[in-house]
Amino acid sequence: MIKPEAPTKVKARPLGREFLIFWFGQSTSIMGTAFTQFGLPLLVFRLTGSAFNLALAQISIYLPYVLFGLFIGAWTDRMDRKKLLIWVNFLRGLVIISIPILAWLQGLNVAWIYIISFLNSILAVFSSAATSAVVPSLVEKDQLVAANGRISVTDSISRVAGPVLAGFLVLLAPLEMVFLIDSLSFFVAAGTLLLIESSFNPASSASREKSAKKNVLKEIKEGLVFLRNQSLVLNTTLLATGANLLGITAATQQIILVKHNFNATDQQVSFMFAAGGIGAVIFSFLVSRLPKRWSFGRIALGSQLLSGLFILLLGVAPIFELAPLLVILIAGCGIIFNVQFKSLVQYSVPNQLLGRVSSTITMLAFLAIPVGSLAGGSAIEWTGNVGLVYQIIGGLFILMSVAFIFTPLGQSQNLNLTTPEGPVKPQTN
Image (tube, rainbow, N blue to C red):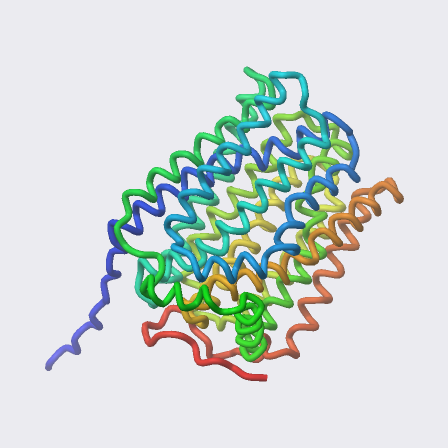
């Protein structure tokens, strides 16, 4: 009797030296950014103690995406993305280092924090638009989920280690010094990009010069038209926009929640930030496995529905120890959605359009953040009950996720992002 041969396992191909260099540089800057993400809201809270000022700080970060995202995306598709990223990282290092310098000169106030955050965010828009096209330039189509998942793992680890390390640093040095770490990380990231030989633009310089002669508004329109004709990507963008509208308050007002409800120390606040990273690390390992069992639509909608449930429970948590656990689950659901969405965009959009389409998506998704942040901060100030605001946000999250079941996103039952066939065919409205 002849035994049937066992199925041959396909060994995953290595992602390559240049991707690893890029990954290292990204990981370094992400670790530094985690210090700033911990330090900035804590610094604003120390200066003002106000939920409304925390909301304004978030608006200063996200407003540039709304104001300049479309134009920057179009310019990014025209430029040499590698040179652009090198300069952007260098300039971000200079902007962030101004915080400890102003503190040393005793000139730091909340207005300066808003200005610095705004300038850093403008540079971040350039970085986001250019970086969206880097991974498809360094790996094959069927490696996108794995590559994005690996970046997400290090991003998540940084979210764990960054706040914890920053929390210990605050015990030894002034809070403003955590921003020095972020500044240095951008300089390191700029240096690593110099070691990469591959182009981040598949088109020739002549093609870019030809594109540069086009009207920038026409190029923006091309990106908008392409997105409009991709019904699945468009509906996922709308879901992300709704999630940002509701979720920004739950993400940024955790300091107010734990300070008011549990009298948390600064170190406990750092554990809350670290909890988000722990959840992202744990769930990042599931990202590439989930498509083997469920469709893209079920993963996207399921992760958002569960996010709403956990946010609601965070609002009624009776003891501090439950809060980090719920943050772990919320962050884990968020990372699953974000990696899947990013991979969907990279699959679906031609590389020469990635800058402007990604910026359009980011602009639409971030458009809701200033509105949601201002509304959430004002609601907390008005009601004086941060827990109640969290409960309302969680309930709205659940209702929104259920509503999207009846859109093309809920009907995408056969889409798998781990196949090597190439881009997903456009789904027109």
